[in-house]
Length: 376
Image (cartoon, rainbow, N blue to C red):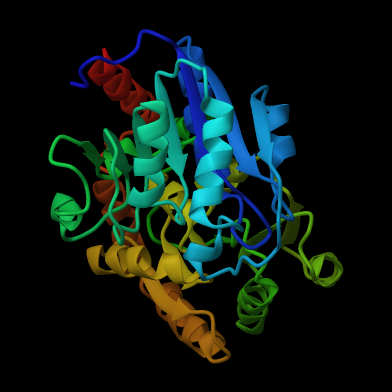
């Protein structure tokens, strides 16, 4: 239990998004923010104005957002240290200006470029208690709470020497941040028996157009005309006209642009082809077997871990030869129903939840209940 926790209900969230960072961090923070708001918390966001940011999604969800000025656009997709866009000292000072004279219950930080140096500085000048969301376990933190809902064979040991001894560690898939539509979709799942009749291609907020096109072309080359294929892309997808053309020509192929019913599509699919980001955990929650192609370096470790557990098949990072690996694995799965069915079973097991349709477990509600109870 966190001692001396303030009685205020004000919570700030420091998170960024951009065309390079993607939308995953903002999306999971929005899921947490909405659940906390239902419990009477007042939530505000702090984000830097990177190119391609998702500030409108935050505003449209009804949350106040403070935008930090963009000094340059030097951030790189696979260089987490560059994701602040400024030196950490500058970012910490900008954040402190917003937090000053405010009585906070908690500051939630979801940012791979922020570590113990930033946290020490902000805590020193504000006295705020910090909760960190981090699944990388590759740097030290000074925080009262750390949320890591990813799966690792090392379990909690991966955080040894990286967080204070008195830090409340919420580690494991039972704490995963999931939107309510996924919980609802789970209630209406049909029992998968391993036969592949419908495939979902979805690489999340990734701008890697080649991965989507490679997956689609691989499926079409197999000439499985009776298999229905759903293709999900963002509205900014670079080759959207090409995908539209293919889907208009090919029967049993449908394009979904900026889909708002991804949970439904996952619940109806028998197999998914996608990246190893946030959507990977959503697929596992719904017991959807997956072929994973990582499109960013930070996806590799968790993709390998889930592969080792048997809940998905990791094909590797996107490369020119990935199509051949994809074709080989698809051919195996079309013939081996037991393997596909086993992946579904292992996914449910990995997520530490019941496979029953009427199971009403909501990981996000469980997380918030645990969080607020510990902060009393």
